[in-house]
Length: 118
Image (cartoon, rainbow, N blue to C red; front, side, top):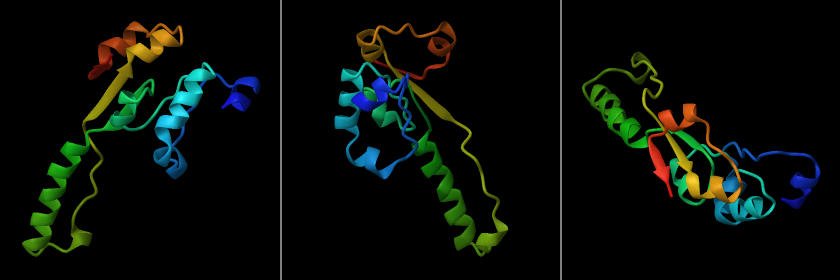
């Protein structure tokens, strides 16, 4: 992480990296020590210090998947079902981490966040 700070990077955004998932707490901690905010794609990461975390509502996706299972069990071939994109998303912001990094969260983000992590 120190390398990122010295290279001029202003933030870290690990896109679904298996390495990040396996070591996310340690990596977020190291990024914070290097004064780098980390943006993540899972709500659970906001709880460990990602700033912000933007993700689909997985509980909603699971409920919607039951509809597909029902259709297939009723005889609809899988190729006959349309693929749906998630319609609901969560924006979680770790205000404690933002304060520690000396960042001000814009009003436009504050109005859209679905969860405040303090």
